[in-house]
Every structure is written in C-alpha cells, then in structure tokens.
Image (tube, rainbow, N blue to C red; front, side):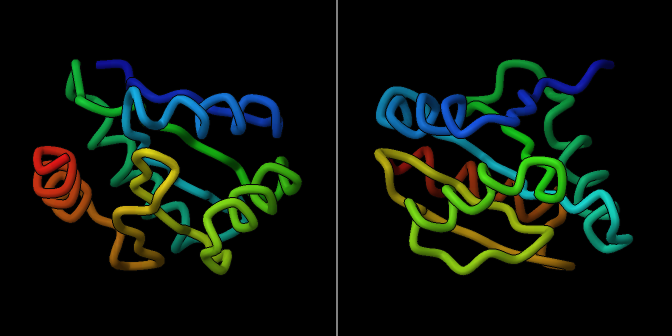
Length: 119
C-alpha cells in the first residue's frame, strides 16, 4: 500500500500547512537522509502513514535537502532541531515531539490517538 504523506521542500509549503494547522493537525517528521537512526524513524513513519484516512496530515521534511524549511520549523515552534524528529502540531502549537529511537509506529499511533482525540 502506498504511504499517505506529503513531502515538502519549501518554506512557503510549510507556512501554508502551519497556518492551516487549526483546520487539520500535522504529524511532521524531520528526516536526515545521511543518518541510519533517522532511516529507522522514517521506516516507522512510513508504516504509520500506510493506514488510509488518518485524522491528520502526515508531512516529511528532509533536513539536509531542505535546510531552510527545517530552520523555519525550529523558529516557528521554538523547539530545538534534532533529527530524526517527530512533531505533532495543531493550532500552531506543538502537542508532542520526540526524537531518535523514541519515534516508533506505536508511539506515533498512541500520541495522535490521545492528543488529537482530545482537541
């Protein structure tokens, strides 16, 4: 099954998503294509996105290839950059974030189900 995520590579795409985060929450993965730990997190993210009709928009940012986007995310959210890094965003606020080995299918599923259901 094809993963259901959007890869963004421009600050404009990020800013549009961020502005619309009140309408639909965002699960964003900051991924380094040069890091094996990030590769493992990306695999977990892809498994998570395979389920159709998630209640959120799943977004991928490759941090090496799209450094300005990654930097703008850090600035707007006020959360120090790490990669890999997962961020759950709604109403322009970070509801949850994790990095490195804390990014698993189970954690993504749990956090979205707990935090998005409440909002």
